[in-house]
Length: 138
Image (cartoon, rainbow, N blue to C red):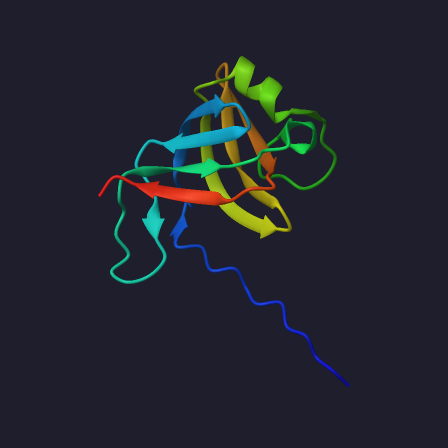
């Protein structure tokens, strides 16, 4: 029997508990800025200012999901929209990242989004065929 291991992804920085304050679209590149940078995942665990870029974003496969209630189990309603449309409507969101998931050409963030004074549980799904680049201003 042959075993093949998919190693865990160890990103150099985390956006956990970071507040996304701006999305910038430059062609097929998405730049995502936070209020207080990123947290290094290796010692000494600093928190440098910086942002994340996603290259070769496939906008037709990138989405935002907004749920009607936060933190509850059970039935809910919600809205699914293209990420590019969400950015056009909300270029400066208030999105607090709780979790990050990395997959094949995909990065997903879950957390809480405040829109027009309403609190939503939400997910941002970015399908990118290019690199995810952490840019620090150190």
